[in-house]
Length: 402
Image 1 (tube, rainbow, N blue to C red):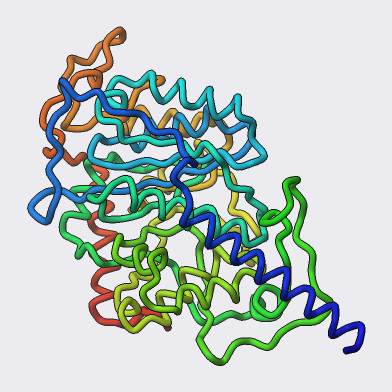
Image 2: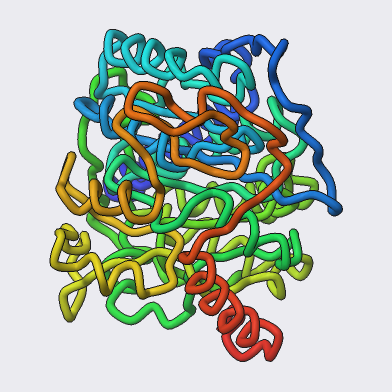
């Protein structure tokens, strides 16, 4: 065997070991998160099922220095009916995770409903490597295990923020089939085929304790012909049934594609997209949108622009559910809090479930009534119009897995 062939063999051997370590990580998570035992003497009964509003499982991730941003984002999207998993990557410290846990536990509703967990044994996250798909799959496995009642899985980052209340979101999603998946996708790979799909990379973050960047092979591999590659936004709103398909894996497709994309650049932009569009069971469930508002250069660079106060009107008129990206504590976030979420500092966003009197010294959401009742606000109309248009395209099958 020549030197080049030996090198390629060693590379793929390392990649195979990496995949095996990953599969082990998503199945053996029992001690990997902090959980708060709910204290329910005053908690409202949460009703689940088709006759009640949908519930969402949020995976909210960040890194070192993001404690305050993660906590603020959690408060902005909090609702007792939902489930939340917070993750500070391995670049963050245990002290940061403990501080986040203290902040979370200080919220009366979270103490009572016990629906927020924090990953205690964090995953490494290398921006362009396979660890960026390991973390959300690990999160999905945890959320599937700890809560049997949620309907959609939503990925958020510390640089994100909502543009509506959870009452708005649940009200609009009440009219959406619960097997529908919102995922921006295309098979038109363009420049990504040569620069993202064909290069072979290895993410040492999977098997090395210290953080390091990916390294690349000198050779490229041909574009697959056993399956069709799709790409798109890494931010997704995925149905519970599809996540069960990916994590439990009764069909071998999710595992096969995981092994392939383990050696791809930015697998978070191709993995879920390629799995869903190559699956006969799920390919007709795709609405081609990530429900995010972003401002890009043309042609787009690696990250969208940071949104500021001058972007507020266009942002809220977009009909999007979330926006990114924001600088920490940018004044535009205060505008969203005041005008849309009706949220005071260090308080959760208000909803119909909040039963207390609003004043500067009393948080109205420190007391609650029926958490199964929704009271949508003005922003829900914009979001409803957006969803109606997307579902019309979906019903015509004009924009599915093309």
